Image 1 (cartoon, each protein chain N blue to C red):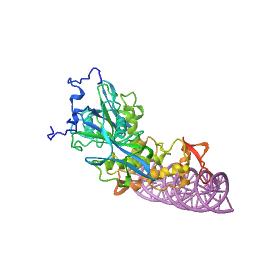
Image 2: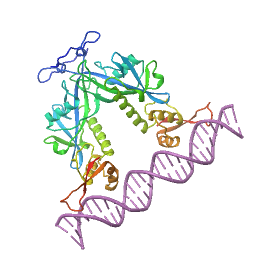
Image 3: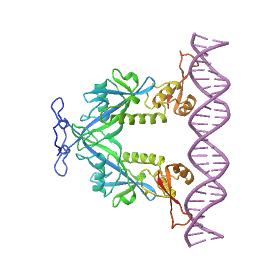
Length: 209
Length: 209
DNA sequence: GGAATAGTGTCTGTGAGACACTATTAG
DNA sequence: CTAATAGTGTCTCACAGACACTATTCC
């Protein structure tokens, strides 16, 4: 319970004396699996949907997203990012509910036991969830076009080939190693260590700038 | 009053039996005045701020923004666009309030009697309102970099010089008429009418593609 | 004609993309 | 040695930006 002198407006009313919506969060959890983008779906009585929950008091939207992922899909997420607020007054027949769509990006190893679906094959979802996935994919692709692994899916050190494979999986198309190298090299710093134990010339390890 | 069979969850409770936040909207209303971007500010007992209001039941966020502009600043707006949800649980000392920041772009003629401030000179505002303005300006500039007058501030027909002046005002820098022309011409269609009554060679009028 | 603006031909520099060549390892 | 991968030199093409030239109007 929060204890403080309650606010009253010019009519002597508290904020909670006026109608308020329930606020929900939904998350498109994207991960790279088998060289392509996949999204986490859960099933409830209304059908397949993105994991989500209602926001609790004293909690931010991001905290609600992370709680939802922990409880409903056993996922430890990182940094939820807001995409859009869905606010049609009658979109939920339980009452006045607005929903804030989020994007969460996780390494495949963080997803254990949840259902993965290719983003290209995700349809027939409840509400506006197919739209949310499209928004999430577009946002993620735009980010990865601009800088090397901004979500930190690879560890802190990686070879340029590992980075290339990741970016190709997210972009959904081949990128070309030489062009890619020149595009990214300015935003990376060399380390003095090399990959080893593989066939061919050992690759230098890089860090994000 | 909405009358329908009330929803009950597995504990027999309605959604409104759980704590709910108040949801507010704030709008950065941008317009081009005197060759530069300006923002509409209003003053209340807490200082200078962006116009905003609480969302009413049965209303979308966009409708709340437009109502707020009509009531508080006498502005007829068009298409509010969501920017970000500000959700820190203690950001408003009246209670649990989340706020959805919006961008609204209007022609100068729609702003009558409201206070205009250059976006470069807008500071000392309450809450996160300076941040919202920066977000709004960045969003608008990105849109105008990509296509000709996407907000339709000019009428349906305009000369390339008028379009150039508008884009320069929004970008905050000179753009160069020939480069600009070649960049935009692919997204415009000629009309068979010409500007007249001015000195010099009459300019062709264009429409958005 | 002269001033002013519209519209375009063209030159240059930059950068993306493709290709091929060299470098360095394992076996 | 050969196979395999890392890394780079270089060519070409396209396009942004700048400049200057031509075109068309008003006065």
